[in-house]
Image 1 (tube, rainbow, N blue to C red):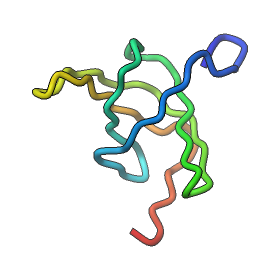
Image 2 (image 1 turned 90 degrees about the vertical axis):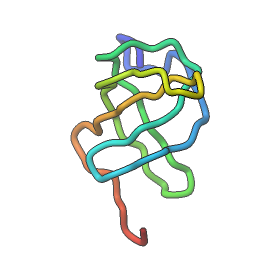
Image 3 (image 1 turned 180 degrees about the vertical axis):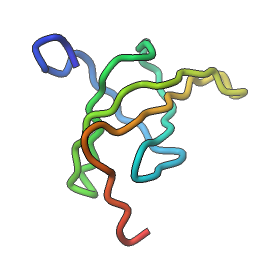
Length: 79
C-alpha cells in the first residue's frame, strides 16, 4: 500500500501456514520488512491489512514473507 492508501502492486499467491494472527506466503514481489500489505481472500470474503515482519529465502529459492494481521484476526471457522 502506498502513502495514499492505494495498492502499489498486486500478486496472487497462496498461504503456507495461517493462524488468526498472521500467515506465511511465498512471493515474487520485491517488498521490504515493515511495509503494509492488504491480504484478500475472495473465497473467504475477507480483506485485512498485514505488516511484513520477516522476509526469508527458502531452500527452493523463493522468498517467504512472515505477515502479521493488523487490527483484526483472520477468521478460521470451518478449518
